[in-house]
Image 1 (tube, rainbow, N blue to C red):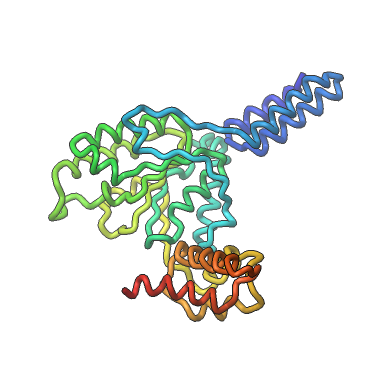
Image 2 (cartoon, rainbow, N blue to C red):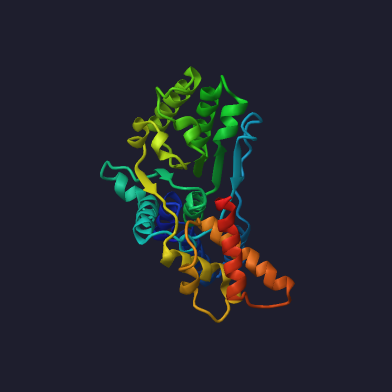
Length: 317
């Protein structure tokens, strides 16, 4: 049977949510069993590992009254796919590292960062960041549709929030509160209603008392209207901006891939501005589709510029 050290390593990797380490040790156990002559058991372990690597799924059944408020998926997005500044990427790496080794931190009475507020213009990578964190940590991603929560359940929103935080405590995952300013607006604003003040107070209490292993992310396009009390409830705050020249070049290269023509992308980047990451990716996709329909395997510089300028024209009008 597996050695005592292998069993301990399996347990540690499981509780650290280190799936790759878990799979590696499982295969080591299989090899150990094969050497002991337990060929059938070794093959069974290997088949289980391969099956769960490819087909592993943790979709949960939500209460009927929450199923239309929470979207579930299992992203495989990785950190290199996120085009942000080096400082932002370093901070995200730190969050991931702390989560993976949280048992070490907890031994000293400290907690890993797992409550994150992200702000920035639309299309700058806030939602993608949540997918990256879920993908890197091999956790399911649950997106809470905050605007739907407010409009559909006005009058009982705080009660629904309590149910959502009960799910957060019960099911480990990455939970994204999208369009968070719908409930996080500063208390005392002129257009505020009493119900929204109660909702915000409820959220402040729930997130402060949350002791789960889940990752909680709130995303907003309008950090200026958020209640100041929110900021100290989060372990870290990331501010995203529109991409600069270097990020534009990297985005276009990554998105075009083998469809890139023989021209310098930095010259293209100099001719565009005020476009988000999402806009640039969409323009590249449009250029690729145009090339495919024309029977070409490369995107010309002219076509790429036209698609990028089309995106700019949307905002000019």
